[in-house]
Length: 400
Picture 1 (cartoon, helix red, strand yellow):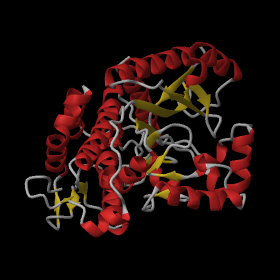
Picture 2 (cartoon, rainbow, N blue to C red):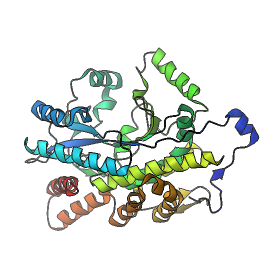
Picture 3 (cartoon, one colour):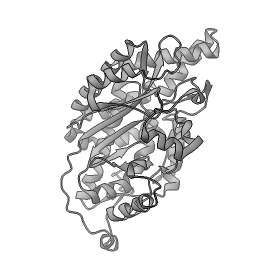
Picture 4 (cartoon, rainbow, N blue to C red):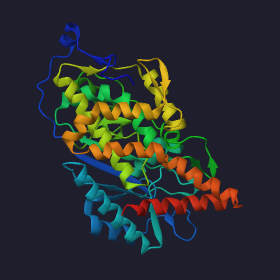
């Protein structure tokens, strides 16, 4: 990822380009943060998945109000922070959500884990939550949606101007593989090592309207495209668009959705801070009549696959250099690129924490290390994967 030192990834719009896309009035976005996390609930005796009891959901809703909700499967639960002015506020709110949910779950002999796939649970054994939205999904998506035993983290960044959201939506996908590589937490599926660091995406990509977003020339073009699907009763609104990054259907935000959910609170915050800082950097370029070079989805998709398969272990393609570059080097360049933005946003420490994820290993790497150590000591595969679940419970609670 060659950055501003050579300028090969930056573009100054040509006159023709400017005629196609007139300069925007450039209000200063507030770049607020909102984090949504999906968790799996495990039984503390069997360490297998368990549905959320009605009593647990009542207690959680009494304690957290509309910041907690059921998810598609009964064994899943979702939390969402309030609109946070900065990463410090997001940390305080997310820690409260995680700790409250963990405490309530314990009273029901359950524990939440923030991993995108359970190491050995079977999707065939799960039931979806009886709710009209989820009943509709089950009808529309048939057998594909039944396998959605996966969890993710979504980061909302406040961008109030419609045209600016569409402009940044075209540029931001370049960075999606870099964020995914840090978040990987789904190496196992139904008791097997998949060989991937984020198996979650292989499941999610079976749904329609997923993956990298198309490029739109304007907000009106985006709205016209969505309206065709709505008018034909294919979707009821844009919340059924599940791209890796999208304009939020409910909020004036850009929502990054590519990441696995992170067991460690500080890792999740580092990824969110990087997302927020990249958004501000792209806006800053626009203020200088520049933009990030937009590469074909084919190339970005290859880096997406490399992040999914290897996490940060094997590097990503630097399109300007035309070669694979070690991920740690790319991350250092990215941190340098957005450092002034992170400082302005008050999250410089958080983006620098991302380096420790590479040094320590992603959750997927740590899960494999726990499994391998248990097998080396003579545990069966089943016993070893139970220890992985215990490890995930401990990591979830470590920062609370």
